[in-house]
Length: 326
Image (tube, rainbow, N blue to C red; front, side, top):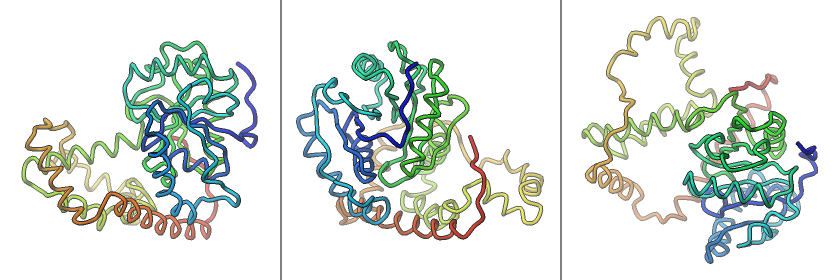
């Protein structure tokens, strides 16, 4: 394997794919002072990316914008080799199509400099199953963000069977250097960590809608006005630990363990019937009211900015703790 450069020396980044995730990454990289080269075959990619960056910039200005960051320091390319020429890092965010990613990774492997780490934003595929047609599989890693990646700090990093540990370390160090909260996973797990937990809640919500047990609005408010207000500070596990009182998690499990057998949740996915689909879509439209997509994006971003500012002010007063590894 070629020697990687220092993460501090990265200057230019290629974003492969300019959809919601790829464009969000581009906005974040720009805010952190990088030059961004975007590859996307769509003729509308430039206009779409301009709108996304314009919408993201107010939030980035509040939270993650470096002095001198230039929101116009990006170019769009339809030629992949041209897009990755001279870059120091590649973030792939193509559609979740396994065969497409396999072909794209093979193409990236052939045109990228051998010392460049290539990270994928995939939300579910493992690197082992995606990197089946590459020669330099040692530098391919998963760098799974959460939407919107320009605002949510989490990135889950994990390699595949062919990935060199050194490449995983480099990617984790780079994401940390640019201000992300990195979970370096010890092994590949379908859906990673955050998506598996989110998916469990999502499936139960669909079951409740399907059975007439709850509406979209009731489900959303049960989280935003309930446990969701606690999770930014301690997460679900430490929240349950605190719920155990002075006995902590041990008391919680000893006291409430038998309830795990109660029918409080269903972990198998319901059939996505037309009725269930329509009920979910209609519920979301009702909840949106007169607000446009842009209104909802700005409303969401302002809320996350405010909450993150609050949590940051609290963590600066707390004693330093060692990083945990998932």
